[in-house]
Image 1 (cartoon, helix red, strand yellow):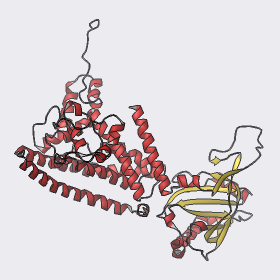
Image 2: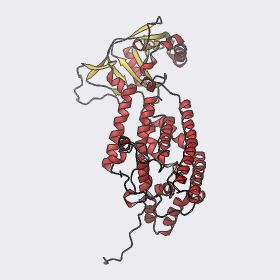
Image 3: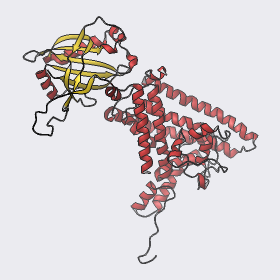
Amino acid sequence: MARHLLLTALIAGSLYTAMLFLIGHPFVANAATHEWDETQKPTANLSTNSKSTSPKNQVNDEKKPVLNAKTIVGIASYIDLNNAEEDINQLWDKLLSNQVLQNNVDWRKGTISLFTYYHQFSQDLSQASVAIGYDTDDLLLNSDLPHIDLPSGTFTRYLVPHGNNTVSDKAWAIAFKQGNLIERRILNRDGEQVSLDVIIVDQ
Amino acid sequence: MEFLHQIISEEYLYYFETFIQDWGMTIAIGILVLELIVIAFRKQFTLKLLGDAFANFGTFALFFATGYLLVGAAYVAGFYWIYLNFSITQLPINGWVILTCIILADIAYYWEHRFMHRCGIGWATHTVHHSSPFFNISVAYRFGPLDGVMPFFFHLPLAILGFNPIVIIFAEGFVQLYQTLLHTEVVKKLPRPIEWVFNTPSHHRVHHGSNPEYIDKNYAGIFIIWDKLFGTFAEEKAKVTYGITIPVKTINPFKVFFIGLVRLAKQMAKTKGLKNKLGYFFMPPGWSPKPATVKGEK
């Protein structure tokens, strides 16, 4: 009986995985793309302690992943971080109501990357530049909307709990130091968010 | 194959599921009339058979009233709660996802069906479906009181895997609807390739048989390959005797509907000790407590 249950799990697992590949689900799309390139740039391990002391919500590796150069298309604005929620919501409304842009997205691909790029923080951390846009590779045609270049280089990924779109305070503290924070949302063909991850590129 | 990638809304899938189930029943009634005509030509028609057919639809009405109306909302709400809070992802609704869910639901159905045959409380409700001494399409609608509850636990993993609850319910319904067509003696054996892969009227006749070699065989929904993989397959050779080992001698749908639970309750009431009572509840049908022995006696 145990053997049969194990065989059942194997068959079900195989079918499920095959389906994920067929629909280009982010679980497998991420592994197949080079956006968060895992051909790593080795970094010196300065710690004399062989065990990593990284916090639990930080994915760290001696060989750090590299973000390749990427351009996004969307909208950008300088926002008041003390009123961040309202300002960000306005930016989202502006992006989502831009029918020209929305119709220009190649939704048939099944997995669409939507980035939110925070950078140019003011000295007193009260303001920042925010750009929200789609990867140019996910558009059907060139767009005359603002093109924003994301920074490239080694980065650290921060986990966002499933179902919770909030970036941790620890990640924000590091973002202020490094001068950037990038949220990548993966959307399905219906425009629904299926995953969110956050990275900070080393400066 | 591009159409399999097209996104389908929850509302459309729910409407489609209701549409095919409603028309499925309408077509089943039409098929029953044709079957009765064939049975009459074979001079096998009896009033008892007709009464049994009415009783079958009577149990379905009771199942609908107790299952759908009382439990249905909780059933769907349970799936949504798991899907929204504990799923590893949330999958889109398109052709590929629906197709995969149907196959996975069929695997889940195999194990659920096996449980219903090999566990006291499962058999108590499922015995209603097997209790008819006849085999025609109306038997497909012969349900027991808890038949609508058991599937929830076996299909829960699908919600955790991220299938939308509407997709799961559609898949479950599709697996059930497929089997409706299997309840017939008019169709003999289908071509070998079909008999090899799919559940067919021949395979399902074996499942309903009370012949010793046919007991607890062919649990499959759509694909008979699960029975072949897990050692529960039997091919139809000898003529099938339908019904259960202790026959149900009534066509009163109320008595038929509750017969299994009543028999289980009587067994549990008669036996002494909590362990033995739970034994009847959980152990396979046919189980009975070990007789007490005096120390030293062999």
